[in-house]
Length: 320
Image (cartoon, rainbow, N blue to C red; front, side, top):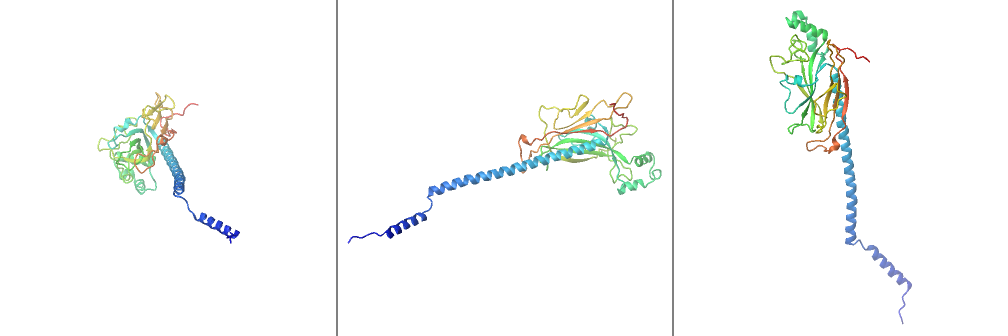
């Protein structure tokens, strides 16, 4: 008798084959393709994430550097705004300063300002409590009386660009330094002891425009860093001043320079108020490892600030 195959046996065989098909895995080629495609996708995503982080970091550094340049420019403008006399060229006084650094520094601005004494300082109070004619003798009596009336003393201030060497902690191309030679320190004020090397610019044998340091002792001023990440000058570029009445200092640098207005003194000894324009450009490019580096994109726009000098001695208001 012939064997007959029942429909149930066909159904069972089909289910068994389908189950075996479901149990089968990826081939080696399919697995390699999946790994390669997945690696490309992950690498692309990681590259985008890293690039976004670097762009964000660069923007933060650029913004911070520009803010530092703006704060430095505002500080210089406020400082110079208190000047009673400003030099057309810092070279007029740099040669008198024995302790001014000489390692590639570029002087930009030099002026005299009147620094007020601090009435809350114990040393100031000690001086003001003294009777000048009793505590001092000779020329010091007049000096004491003048200081009490003026309540301030003249300080020589110089701004310069200083290069960043490999032996410094500074990371930018160069930095701005501020040098000052005050007449007194707080500790020396009660006894009217001048800073070593200082000479009063309003003395009998001295003046602002032709100032000479003291004949005894080397100058002993203070030098501090104002800001880092100053840009280098662009080769071939020259400073641009408002007009021919201004003199650029220095005359061949376009990264940090000042334009001092000339012809502010007439034949009778009086002149118009002196004005000053300061230009400053930063660069976020770091010269040392460990900092964010840039190409030419690290160079920032040049900032500008115009200052009207507050000194009014021998000055006349301009005619409008």
